[in-house]
Amino acid sequence: MHILVVNDDGPPSNQSSPYVQSLITTLQNPPFSHTVSVCLPHIQRSWISKAHMVGQTVKPSYFQPGPVFSDDGQISSKPFSTGEQWILVDGMPASCVQIGLFHFFKERGPVDLVISGPNYGRNTTALFSLSSGTIGGAMEGAVCDKKAIALSYAFESRIHDPAVITKASSLSVRLIEHLLKNWPADVDLYSINVPLRKELLNGDPEIHHTKMLDNRWLSGSCFDEVEVDEEDPAEQEREIREGGESPHKEKKLGESMKRTHKHFKWAPKFTDVHESVRKAGPGNDGWAIMEGMVSVTPLKANFWHSGPSGEIKL
Image (cartoon, rainbow, N blue to C red):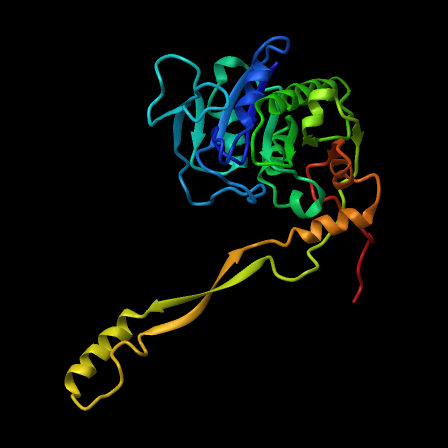
C-alpha cells in the first residue's frame, strides 16, 4: 500500500516533532512493509487547521532522516542523489497533502491513504480539533478523494521514552490497517488519539469508537494582552528638531517619543477543555483519552448542516 505521511509539527525533532519518524519507520518495516512517501512542513505549523497560504509560492527542500529519535537529519535545497528522501515545503499541512499527492512520488503509483501525524499532543474535542493542522491535513486528503486518518499522541510527559513511542507506533499501524479493512462508505476520515503512557508496554489499551465532544471557550479570550513600548520615528525627529531650536524647553527629549500600545499573544485556556471533558461523561473522545483508552472518531469532510430547512420568508 502507498501511504502519504504529512504532519503539522515539521521534520523530526526531539523538541517539536518527536513521533513522526517512529511512525514512518514502523510503516516501512516488516511486518507492515508499506511504501511511504513523506511531505512535511519545513517548520512547526500547529493550530493552522486546513489553511493554504494564498499568494505565496510554496518552495520545497529535501530531507534525509538520521537514526530514529535523533536530530541528525540533513536538509538540502536540491534533491539528494542517493538514499531515502523526504520533501519539506514552506507551507501548511494541507499544502503538503496537495503537493505530496499531485507533484511528487508519481513513480510510486497512486496514494492509497493519507496519514496526518502523529501530532505532538492530543486532538480531542471540538476546541482542539477545529484548529488542528493535523486534522486539517487529513481533511485535505479526504476532499482530494483519498481515505485519510489524523493521528495524535496524547503525551503525559515531555521526556520521550523510545520504547513507549515505538509501541504507540505499532499499535497505531495495526489499528489503521483494521480501519482500512472495515471502512464504512459514509466515513471520509478518522481522528485517532492514542494515550502515550507507560502502560502501553504492558499490552494494548481499550480502543473505542467515540463522538467528538462539542465544547466552547468559556473563560474569555484566547489571547493575553502584552504591552509594548514602541518608538515613533517621526515623533522622535520632531522632538529632536524642536528641542534643538528651543533652548528653554525643559521637557526631557524622548518623553513623548514612545507610545504604549498592546500586542496580543495566543494563550488559550486549556482548563475550558479539561472541565468540559470532566462534565460530559462517557462516550466522547476527550473522555476516552482521560481514561487511558484509544479514541477513534469517524468524521465527514464538511461542515455538516444542522437545524431547519426550507424557504425563509421575512
